[in-house]
Length: 627
Image (cartoon, rainbow, N blue to C red; front, top):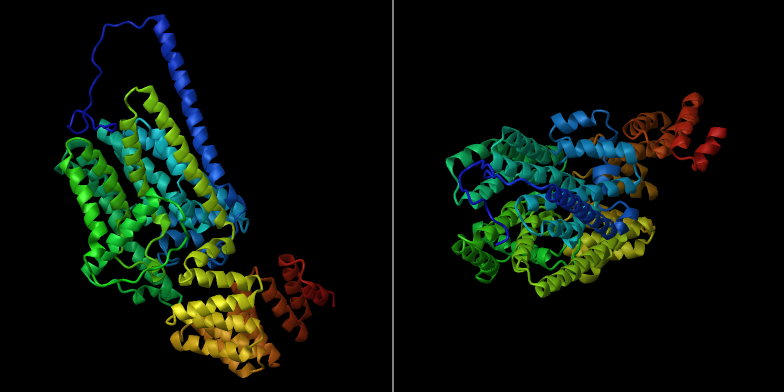
């Protein structure tokens, strides 16, 4: 096999090269230097190919727009305007749904640099991905894979990685991998040389990776797997050496659910996790069997990938459901039987794949399971194990110096990498905007409610309410248990001027989720448009009580009070709206209008001027300021 553990199975052995009396002739020394120089040129060319191939694959994303939960992380995230953002990221778990302080700090820094220009975010994600591809190459080289460079190239152009790189919100996924890979190579250096410096680097890089994303937590188990691969056993020294890594992984892993629960409770709402029932152990094993087979298929045959896949119904445990898991166990058993030769290397790659993927196989409830069981960005780390196996197998097959075999191998690899890159480039083009992203999902799987819901919202933004209502109706049929299913139809009816139907939908939504500030606010808007201002005021007030930082609800409350002739009462909620969202031109404009009517012209002038600074095209504010 091409990948070989050191012949000496002892830990941290330091072998000196055998003594020799051979004197290198000047000509030999010159040839040696020329060989090193030529090798360096080849290495640079290989790195250049990886970078160029990756840039071409993701070139459609350069003009990509915001997608789905990008607004949650950035454009509509109030923490981006919070002066205490960095402090909260590090020392206030629950200030955001995830405790990833390094990721959140750098994301905030990006917001200061790029604001709403998506190009900078995309270039950052792509740059981190290409760095990871080069580090994958380095890792495989440290594992003595003859075709290590090919592994980095495949990682750079693999279609299953598109979701992680092209989606701005997945910054955390591409950010955590470089320190993870650096930790792994530092650990290999420690294993081979026993230097404390390498151990400290491995632990430090692992801590950085965990503070970027906790899905890096399997690292301590991975280094124990590496110890077994290297020495054929896991000794007491290996367990002691891995202990500090567990001390990093376990507390940070436990902090994540605490942060998520605290965040949602702070928003006066709970996630849909409480509605997800995975059943007992056998049911979860069945789900793990099915999801494992899907992930393996997407990694090995990455054709026709989608951002979201339909969620199959959980069935009672059956023999058929366990077939993928049994097949996988049988494959692992075969590798174990051949562990004294190539089976050991196969178990290293396969074990890395399973260990890295284990948190997402369905044993524990995660919020995304409300709409799907599998998401391809979870493959970003585990796939490295499969790529390593593939590259090792190729190295073994093409190792004999048979020109015909090597020529055929080169042709095969050229075709393979080209097909992967073309497929990835086509898939990346779907990440340009929301409509190009969700339309293929709806076309292939019309029963995928999340895609229908997101496509309907796109239609609302594009002023196509009839089309939006049709998609929202499908969502309501698929998920009648969701308040949003009714609330969104109400929005579409309101856009069509059908206020009675809109009110009826909002009232049904409130019956399902009476604690939703958004639904109260929306119902208030429709009631106000229908001339029912007293009822509208009640719902706007309820929205502000349920969500005290809801600037839009305060703005609507102030406008409704002003329309009711209560100008003095309107000043307080409108002022609160401006304080909560100082970058809202509309909030400044509305407050200025009320102040002007109250004769407080100096204050009104200041807010009109601020509104024009934020929105120079606001003709109403310009006209009122002139008056």
